[in-house]
Length: 112
Image 1 (cartoon, rainbow, N blue to C red):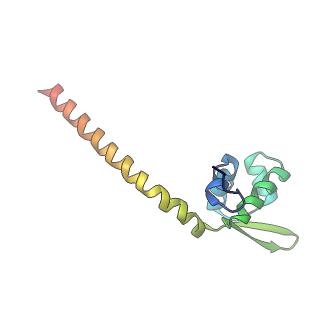
Image 2 (image 1 turned 60 degrees about the vertical axis):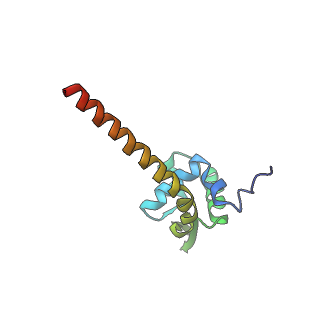
Image 3 (image 1 turned 180 degrees about the horizontal axis):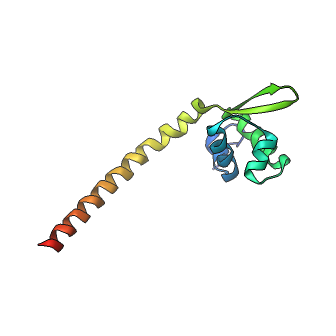
């Protein structure tokens, strides 16, 4: 089965850990590439490469401020990823609820 091109699939784009770190930082505010590179401990070409991919899948936007390009999280386009993960969240919640019931039962047995 052929993989979807990273440049068209936000799921592939966020599969890369450094890109997720960039998105995490952009969740806190807008940054230029120098600031992102400094905060991530990466060099600018590496950050620029990841920014290009994130921009191609429209997870970030860029605006010009003087001679700098400032990157902004386009959080609305993370919604398909969130929507896909939502059923798993419900599954994990049910499992945690079941585990809590088992632990409560064990506590009651221990105290009786």
